[in-house]
Image (cartoon, rainbow, N blue to C red):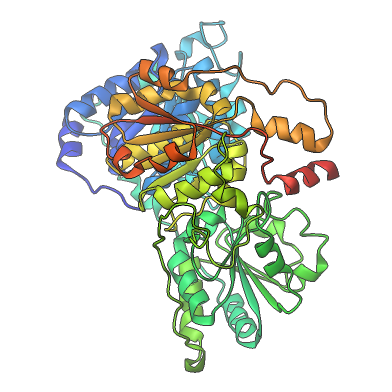
Length: 593
């Protein structure tokens, strides 16, 4: 994890430390935190006063979201982009409860986020003060305990630094996740003896993860691999720290690679060894590769075996007899109790050991990886996926129909997006279309939060990521339903001059609800959305915007130039709402429920 060292700015500000809120900001700056995402309010003002002093000195500053849930999503996106701690804040009462959805999403996705919420002044506890959220009213500390690794009230000034340290440590895991501190306004504003106050040493040691590895299990794993005749790699979202070593291992031994819907982010989706996604909106080529009877070893790396990837693990004894689960989070082994071997430890160290243990005769030349693709029109010879990935409806990827086929939209985006664009995919049918049909050239740039399934996550997370990496092209792929929930956050991108491109797939419906009802035999109800002028709406909020209705307009999009604009752009893409998304596996799961 990258972080700032002690800076002159921090040292200067320490001499001007006015309140305990300044101390919080000072410690976060020492961890390399550059922004706090939030919405101000009366009880949280001492923290904003401290941020004002910090900003004047060239240090940490606030980014003001339009809704607290958006602030939490922004902190999530910032953490994913930088590897640093994401920080969000709110005032007491409804400000704190508004944060909950974003914090809960970070909890399921294991993203390190610190949520700081204000509390009414101590002497007013239990007196039904405006927006009181103490144990005598709406107990936000208790509420956050259900969706964080740590949640605590700072009840007096002497607790602040110790509890701040405990909260930061909790965000790092393992597993990682969010933590919450509730701090009364008068404690944050406490200014007694601050100029002579000696704070704790920098808390950066809390961010250093020990590289502990089960050496005996690794040695057993080496033997398993040396004896295996046919292997397959199954990658989850947690394998990012070792993806370079994992890819080298796969290329050395020519091991086929499949991923879960979240694990897809770590590999170029055009890699010759890639066979596609297993589970939700996945590919038959991935399922067939996993179920090949000739396999004698399945290496699952950095995965929790969620229902979205593999709902039948305990029942499929044929897989458990071949399964080796490799992970750096001990808790994840609870989801693979029948595996023949569990290997726990630092993933880069494990795969470096495997690479070094391969005999010379097994050192094959790595396969070539072609990260480019031609962009001719209507030519089915154009390959935009890995050669071994099989699409459900490849013909629709080349359709000239109007309204636009979502499959065609995904193909064009795959070919036309800037190579270094970060792509955030929102909940809903956007998930399904992107998981199956969107194939990026580079690994590490595809972002999805498919655990908690929060609509609008991508809108906030894309902004948080763009704040952290100014000037880097950032794409938010969302639906009309999600955008109507939280589209006002585009004004944050306007204010910050962020080149975020919001691609709104408009089918005039809550598409996943509509098709889920149809596929599940339910009543068709409550999924319709009215016609909305998304372009006019974006213009009214200060963003550039355009609409795409036809294949010709889609092909004429210069996404590279659009991503270079000094501010956000909304692109409304009108798609065929009758196209059925590839969500059959999800429907079968619901039927079993």
